[in-house]
Image 1 (cartoon, helix red, strand yellow):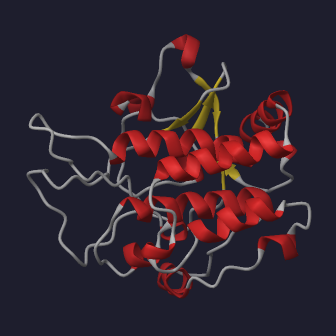
Image 2 (cartoon, rainbow, N blue to C red; image 1 turned 30 degrees about the vertical axis):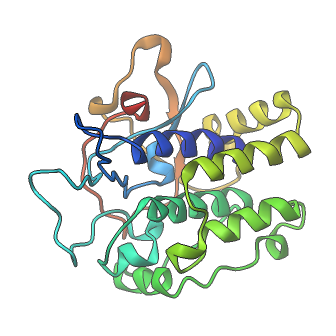
Length: 239
């Protein structure tokens, strides 16, 4: 279930990461806000990555200054929390947090205040997922902890690599029917998770046609210390 979500979100990230301008030069887009709040599922079972409102491209007229931190604190990569240079691998760390939380059924980085949460992110001390959930296959654990490496160079080289590896693990451990049913249960029905979480609202900026409208946003942990900039495109808009 969790891997099915990762496959589709990673595919959407790859589509954004490899965008080029009219001359064919890469735009170096980084989403910077990959979190459960921005992952939704349609009634047809499609997983969508929403809200590119704070995405960064090198050719934007208004460049984001180094040292300016944007995104949800609990879902940042260490380099993002430090306000240093970002890359597509920044998004992979954030997707790794989402995957870790789906498998562990609890928050990874969360403290009483935003500065304390950012300190946890920068330290990037990741509890071994198999110690929390022994049912997680070893291959899944290896992919997950690779995505959550503190140093960007130690993470997978591209979202496409994450997508392919996650799909291979699904093929190895689950039938397509099992993976699809579990993903729908996780994303559509919060009661399946046993978490006392609020649900993200679907903003009017992210509305889809009636036949593709998400039935509900991904259940989102408390956002007391998570601030973001609103906006949005669906990932399909950049495919």
